[in-house]
Image (cartoon, rainbow, N blue to C red; front, side, top):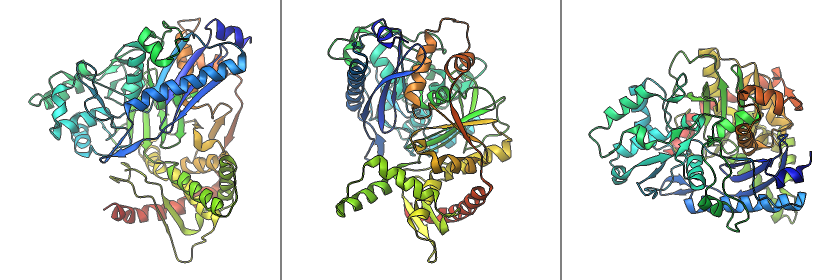
Length: 527
């Protein structure tokens, strides 16, 4: 491929994803190969008991990330990045961004990480006979109404982070169906918000200060493969203040990170699934039919096409492991040693792989924030061991790895045993699998299923939304996403599969028994 010519002539696609710790932009060619990327590191803040990001930082991060992409593209290919064939925006699902009629933010952004909507989530779950998790946008809205927050009467629009950034760049108040499924329940047959449940909600709030029907304040769903707007002049200036990047580029519908993970792992067909692991961890299992019962541990969302997906979402994954790595790094600094960050991670993952199968009676709880599946309202990272535990670096690090998957296993066990959902193929991706020596087999043991890593596993959601943007400008407009991914994107992808080890399964079961027994101590620590 002559990538320089493709970049010059706008035959490329760009995906930008707002992850929990990094904003990343990826430029891909017409053969879907990642050509260049740009990044901006950021972090949420706990302010007045609310996990949030400042919207000023959203815009600053967008500009810095895109400037990095433009610089890296020109350095690598010798041509400036001034246009593209299509663009897509993705971000962390769920949360609460509420605006007035002039698009002024009414309260600070409340992210998916908050567990402050238990009353609303329980009430809506009962009213809908459909599980509404605490992090969903509708739970945040209803909790604000129950709390009689003064901003409610001024609400004219609510959206997700991806929907907000898309609006800044295109002026369109729209959303992809997958991201919409984390705002409000979806009717998978009609590929729209569930109209019956919208009516139930409007009846619940008819005597409250909320002045508009729910359907009028939620973003409009745009089907996958349709244009969801174009880069405006104002949007182009926001994206690239230098003025080099041109307006007019078409956008695919903005999507959630769960959906871009499905695209990036080619797991959108029934009986496939994927696990995304980073700051949070979640499993997405594509269903042939809806679940038989309502489970508060399991969300019902959709693929980017609108098909039903059972989602097990855990707020906490790698943060505690990262904190221990930082602690060991600071110890090395005290000792006068300097070890590169990547090398230290590799060494500690290697140590974890050498630990005892049951971690030698060491149990770790990685709760930096609340965890709905285990009923924790806030976070208390904690490690427990018996007096005669095998307190070695190997067992400690293995315990930290197991803790990344422990809560996910609790939810997945319900899905497997009570709903008999057993996906034929599970793909894994995300930062936790950059060094898969221990993480891939540990996940296989936790799920008791084969787990596959693709060659592209490290590309992440930014590449996934770039693929969805590329699908917008596909040559054959009648081609399904499934066929597009199978025959064009993943036909020659290298992959490696790990089967569950019987020894590790037994060790993890012993670990999980200790883990469940220790949850009372975690709850007491929070209290």
